[in-house]
Length: 336
Ligand SMILES: [Zn+2]
Image (cartoon, rainbow, N blue to C red; front, side, top):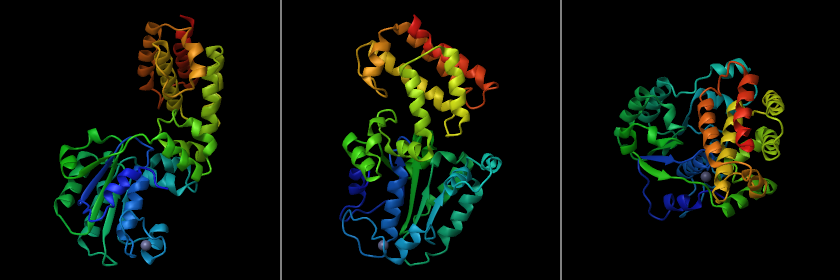
């Protein structure tokens, strides 16, 4: 099955003419990249396709797509993401050096791709992921290409923060909005990935099933499970800080920023319960008794303090002290 079925149907209907440039906008992990790749495969597929049908998966073009070697397809992304997707054969030092930005050279190479005719006489497709990884100079050089309309050339830009994009980029593309996935659809999709048992985590990941999928695959979910357990049964803050430092060092991919974000979600839910609303990320049965021990002003104060801490989460001078600070502030509302 394909997530975002409604969007797929709207883009692949009978007689639908796709624009030169599409912008897939919405939160991370809801399936924008997957849909872009499925659409690219359909556009390049050499077997005639009916309305809503995905690529055939068997023709020479589909085989080349599956092997990542289609001459009429380009994926433009920051080097750091390519390195992460290619896996473990790189040292940590090299991964750190890889850029998180799309470089101007990558767009110049696109110009050649754009001006030389297609290899297989059909469509050519370029996916840019994410568009916000282009600084204004790079985005402007892409705009020059976007301004030259060319039949059978398609750009699909992906953006988790589309409001930060240049207005000119927005005005030259048709925006398609993606949102959190409906629970039933996510559940069926997880079943297909043999992850039905993890569906209870969907609220925690903001109903972005691919974020959940990545967390399972990377092993990060196991560490998050321990973290959530600690929040639901809090003990002494300094002891927790030591445990959490251990979780980060375990190397399961859990960062200090993940810890801060999880604490923020937890405080948010305590606040919701305190005013009689349903929690958004955590299990109500676990959160509600804790919420009873807090006051709203104490929760708001803790939220403000932790929002400030978050700015330092990527590079704390002393991780242990940072985590002690985080835990003390996070659990203070429980003793108010
Ligand atoms: Zn095909």
